[in-house]
Length: 159
Image 1 (cartoon, rainbow, N blue to C red):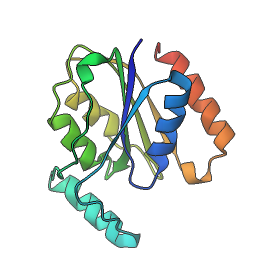
Image 2 (spheres, helix red, strand yellow; image 1 turned 90 degrees about the vertical axis):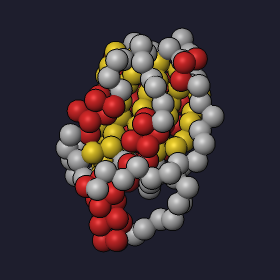
Image 3 (cartoon, helix red, strand yellow; image 1 turned 30 degrees about the horizontal axis):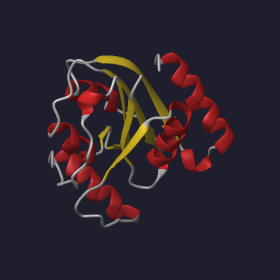
Image 4 (spheres, helix red, strand yellow; image 1 turned 45 degrees about the vertical axis):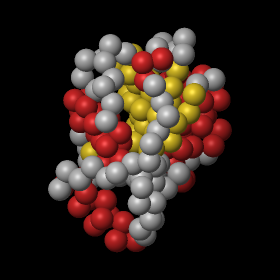
């Protein structure tokens, strides 16, 4: 089975999960990056990120050399911004026509997933959703417990 892990990570949490998935599954790994790579901090980060979500802004992203048609399973990972997928993930999915695939979803957050999976499923309709998982407060999670949680999830998605 050919597997792609495609993720956006603002603070490194989704990257951490994506790399564990890559190791376990021997998957190809693709990171979505915005053209504006500027990192906001403190309250500015929340106003900026939440504002993008509320105004439905799709920020420009750097070209990502992934042909989703080549993969049997596509795993998508995003942080949760204002109860939604990060706008960079929305930009990526808006530029791809992923259909007829097996897709698994993960999100990372510090305070709740909101409607992130519902919104992601709408963006990848026409696919079979193999599973979803939420990772909460990864900065405070023991790395060995995180690897165990990811490995257990992998068993449930049929990878």
